[in-house]
Image (cartoon, rainbow, N blue to C red; front, side, top):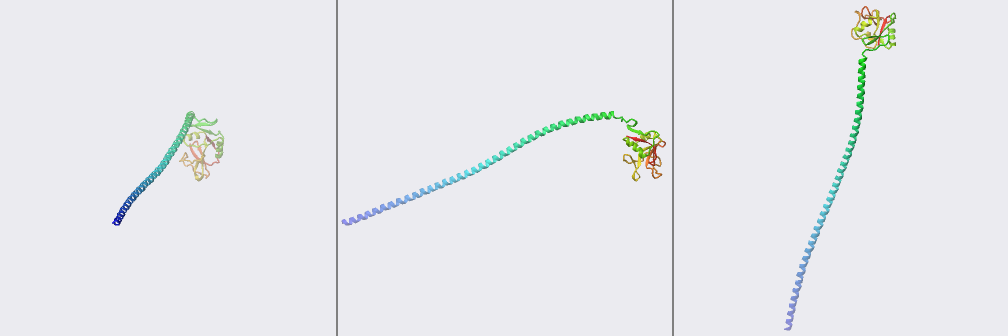
Amino acid sequence: MSVAFSGKSREDEGDGWNLMTSGRTHNSGWRSKSSVCLIGAAVACLGLLLLTMILVAKNTSAINQWDTKYEKLIYELTKGRDDLRDERDQLMIHSSNLTKEMEILRGQYDTVAASRDKLQAKLDTLNVNGTDKSCLQGWIKFNNKCYYISAHGVTKTWENSRKDCQERGADLVIITTRDEMDFVKRSYGVTWIGLFRGKEDTWKWVDGTELKGRGFWQDGEPNNVDGEENCAEVSRSAAAWNDVPCSRKFSWVCED
């Protein structure tokens, strides 16, 4: 009976051991699960921290980039302002120089205008006082023109008569009015004037101008009877022009 009890006790002891062993196994599994949770939480925290650091780094980079762009913008605006200020200063200097030049030009203009007015006043005085043209000694004034009448008894061809006038600084008379015609014809019976036949049978004055209109020809003149009547004379009796050969000798009248 003792042996049987003893065996049972062992069985009981064995059962007790098994229970203890089972209890230990259960506690060990609970601890493992807790450790896993703690590690997972730590990993999650580390991940969140890393994400936060990444976001902060990105924001910091964006801020730095924005600061760089802002600084560049400020630099460009400042430079533009300085350039405009320099341009303004240059324009002010240029404007000041133009103002000075304008004042100088205005002064010069006033001086020139004053000189012009003085000259105009002198000219007006000369025109008033110089209405009556003065003639050289031996010349005759008529209608404010000066005439030289050849000496009595002296006659020359048309060419030589003109030469005499040119040597006196004048030329044979050019008759443009009836009054002038009457003045010229009263000195001699026949007088050379500065009218001659040019090329193409045109009559010209000694100044190169062509005779305009009919002039003061006698009736039927010029007729060029001998084919060589290329010079004009004034007849006192007819008080008109007549064409005759230039080789004839008459008195003459010069006009200054």
